[in-house]
Amino acid sequence: MFDLACTDENNNHFIVEMQFGEAPYFVQRMKFYALHKFNGMVKRGKFDYGTLTKIYCVAILANNIFSYPQFHSVANLRNEQGELFDEQMSFITVELDKFVLQESDCQTDLEKLIYTMKTIHTVTKPTQFPKFWDEEWLKVAIDELDSRKMTPDEKASFEILIARNAEAVKAESKKIKEAEAKKEILVKTETIENGLSMGLTVEQCAKLAGVSIEFVKNILEKISGSK
Image (cartoon, rainbow, N blue to C red):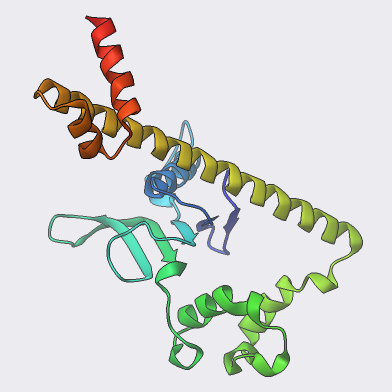
């Protein structure tokens, strides 16, 4: 499931996914979305690969997944020299946490759009509106966000969607924290086991792994019991 899928007048496909929580494997998810769409375009029987239209997989992330400093990136299939090999599929990412431009620094449409996405929820008075919010394309987008114009049914659906998304983010964050805690315990356990095998004392192992002496004794008992 992704947040939005649409096509333009040339039947090019656009897949849009927005991610609020941590997403360590988001690139793999983007590939899954794009390749699933690609496979759906390849029909059985009589088929011409020349009729394939383009697929744009767009990801807008609250947090960072890449090590480089750019907040916006476009990736295609390229060879080892960085030359374009194929552009039928494009992967576009925006990492909001890396976007630090102020209103006066925003020159391109992309910069204006990302600035709007990051700040619109904080603006309460028209006098605080950036000048570029008067540009027609942004006025249309901002108008779509105005929940005051919704019918009661639309507003109820909107609130339900927000609540569901919040619960999903909370559940995902909990899973990530639990996984990280388990990984940390495994690393500390391995450190203690190695220390004990090298002849270190219980106290030395506890200090080395940053755990209590009782934690080390429990591991020692398990090792002794398994022999």
